[in-house]
Image (cartoon, rainbow, N blue to C red; front, side):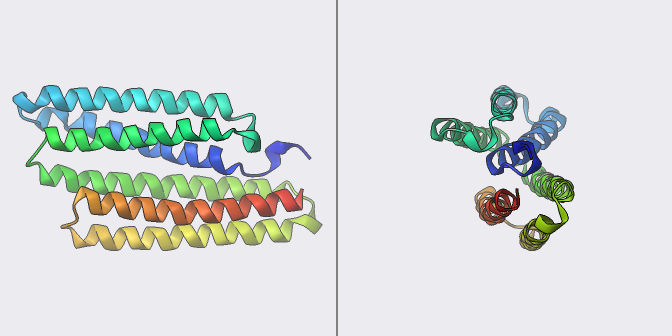
Length: 199
């Protein structure tokens, strides 16, 4: 059985984050004309930097897709640094678009939806990978995928509750996204271990 038969947690994380970046860039591009002309230059610059983050992330995924588990600590640091820069660029956009709370609220919904969609894709890929295993090895992988799905569902419920509150700041939403992503990533790591054991 090849290395491609199971989930690679860092590649899955990168794909999930790339989905979040894509949704974010699309949202901010669509809303940019609403930013006052004085702040528009700063907002456009933040969007341009987000696009650069997106391209760097895409390149990272393409470069590391095939090596899966053998991704180096240095490559992981690069991915994390690019993610941190992307998050900083979102703050720069919000700073430039000060006073546009309704837009911020809409962005929270976009980001939560993107994360949920990314998790669903990961679970779907996990199920597909589990089906490639021999029947004798499949049970543990199926259990790990079920736990992954449960983790995604729990995280999504927490994010929905935060979104319903309506008055959350970007800092609170960012923290909730990070906490939810961390819980899902832990379940993803456990699923990867189960797949390795099954192979």
